[in-house]
Structure formats: structure tokens, C-alpha cells
Length: 374
Image (tube, rainbow, N blue to C red; front, side):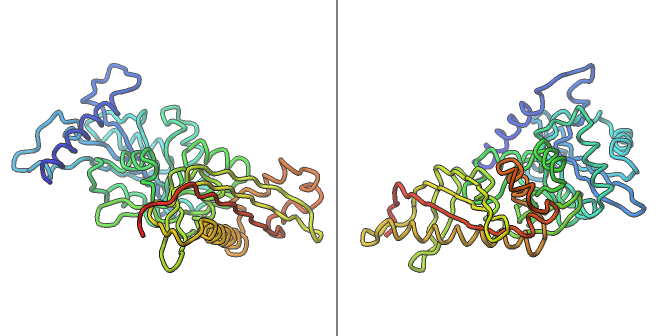
């Protein structure tokens, strides 16, 4: 086991080196750079920002031996520095002036917003604007949120992926680990959604025993935190809105939780007028394979019916939560209606269109194969 772990560390070091050494260069030597892999944005008292930057240590590049008296396992993979100020990038400059390496944001992979910053509309808008205007920060930077301070997330991670930024990147690159229903949000997507509706959703990350895990999502309405949705609520959102290829969708059948690995999904949203209101029809077609259940005495059609009922329930549960609990159009149905049925959109009160909208959810499941567990 130690041999396998050591091999993994060597591979990680080589990967990290290649990962960070791509991009444009000036006269600053690589060993003098502080490559920021993640940034946390929090709110402190007196409306100050608290900015945390995560920087891999030289040992992470595989160039330096562990410090004397420390084993490889005891060597820190990264360090996080934090400082407070009244603007994002002036605070970053203050951090830069106190470190022995020149901070570089050209390879940043992750930005985490703390809960207090999400609750402050003015400061959240300022933070979003600061990220958008900085040319070093790429539009594909992943965005996550925390139910506490983002600083605790960056400082709390101790896993083998070296940094939180590299962990989250690897997580989504590896098909979201196939069994986790979550979603990816990058800066570009967030900017578009906020500019269009003022609303967006951001995945929540937490620390458990030094490891990162995804735990629902934060819901932003008019640039401010409206509330959180747990995993069971988030499932309906992900099924409708996201790419769920290779994801397992589970239903209970004959007392057993049976996963369906999705191979194809299509969502079609339509609108019509019904009972002097707007009716939204969400049609979801899913194909997949049941890899962990086989019973020759059970028709495939019964399994398909079970999945259809389960997914319809998930979509309805999510819709009702957004409508009645958070009063936030997270599905962006109002904007869909404006684009697809503009005459219907204009007929009804735009301010209350989602609040008065009714839902009809139709799900069609096709199972292409079953597994070998009897």
C-alpha cells in the first residue's frame, strides 16, 4: 500500500509541475513564483474582504526533498495566506508584498465564496466584478461556495491531490466520480446567469477529516444568498439542467436501490397557457444501463416505470422547493419562456410569472441492458 501511495505522489508531483509550468512567462524564474491554485473570498467586520490564496510549496513540484526531520507524508503540499482589505486586488497585493514569491493567478483553478460574502449583495457584486475584470483570471475558473468561511476550506484540505484547486479540477475531469450527482460551475457561466437574471446556483463544498466533499448547492437570487438546497433537492435540478452522462441515477425496486448509469439524456422544455396561467412542460428522455441488478422474471418495462416515477418525483420536488421555499427561478424557466414563447411571456405579469407557473413533468426511460447481480 505504501508503494502504491508513493507512486501516486510521484505521479502527482510530475503532473502538478506540468500543470503549472504551462502559460506565458516574463523575467520571473519559476521557483520565484507563487502559483495560486485557489482563492477564497470572505467578509470580515467593517465590510472588509478577507482574501485567502492557496499556493503549492516547492516540495509539491518534486524539486526539493522533505525538510530535515520530516517524512514525505509529513511535508506540507501547500500553504494558504490570508489578509483583509476593502478591495479584492489591493488585498492580494498586500499578500504579495509579504510573501517571498511573486503571486501568479494565471493557473488559478478554483474560487470559493464564503457564506457571509454571498449574503452581502453589494460585496458579492463587487467581488464578481473584480474577478471579471482581472485578465489573469480565466473564465473557466471553477466556482464553489462554503457554508462557513472559504478560508477554512482552503486551510482544511489535506488530501493527496496537493491543493483544493487541483482536487476540484480532477473531480470534474474524472466524470464527477460517476456516482455523485453534482454540477460544475465556472466563472463564465456564473457571469452570464447573473447578468441575465441576477440568479445563479453554486455547488457547496465542505471539509470532512481533511477531505473535500460536495454537499448541495447555494441559491443566489438578485445577487444575494436566498438559501441552500440539499442533495435530494439538487438531484432534480441536475437531471433537468446538467450533463449527467456516466452518472448513476438510483431508484428503489423490490426493496433494492438500483442504479441506472446514464448513457444519453435530452431535456425539452415547452410552455402553454392553461387555466389563465402558464403551464411549463419539462420532458426528459434518458437512456442507460442497469449494471447491478438482474432478474429474468422481471420485465424491463417495470424497471423503466420505476425510474420514470422516481425521476418525476425528483423534478417536482425540486421545482416546488424553488417555487415555495426559496421563491427563486433556479431552472431559469421564465427566461426560457421569454425566448421560446414570447407572446405568452408578454401576456402575463413578468414579475410573477414563475410564482404563478404550474409544472407538468414527463419522463421517458429506455434501459438498454442489465447487469449480473441476481
